[in-house]
Image 1 (spheres, rainbow, N blue to C red):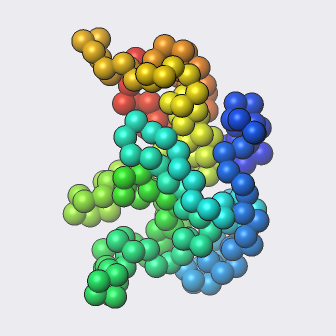
Image 2 (tube, helix red, strand yellow):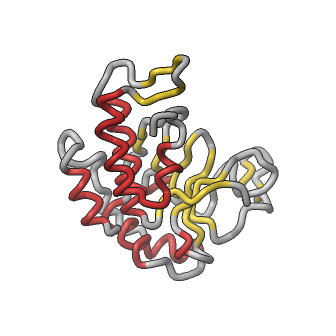
Image 3 (cartoon, rainbow, N blue to C red):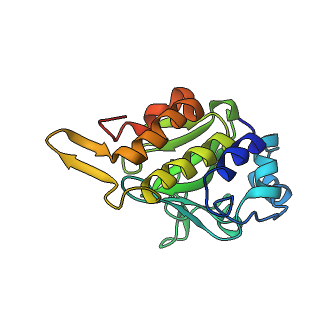
Length: 200
């Protein structure tokens, strides 16, 4: 899914048309130099045209998903590959991991060594960075799915989650809006976005 396709869909449901102001930061050259390697074309477009100038917060079932601002993007990431107390690198962070944001400190990233693997969310605190899941094929798909889940959790019923003897369910109007769209938009990654809900 391209950025144009993703934002065409987002414009159809997001108040004001898009979830954040595009940064137009022209940051791809700087970050390619920091990582000392060419960046995939989609990531270059994101960094030069789309990435926000201020951090963006998307509502999820648990911790918010934070999309980092342009000034937060870079090769040195405190808590992931850099210890700010010792001012030393943390050795187990793969050099090709390009951190885009996090959800409760679970890093959301693109692996520059295999960009075709898409956008990954890894589990923090597992002792390694090998445990996680693919959440999107492209950055455009990732932004659309993040915005859609946020919209479902904020724009419909006041009590968005029903947790009772029937299970942990998304409220009916939100569910009727989200689940069919996410099946189309997320494709094989549907469960990564909706498996928290028993009625998905």
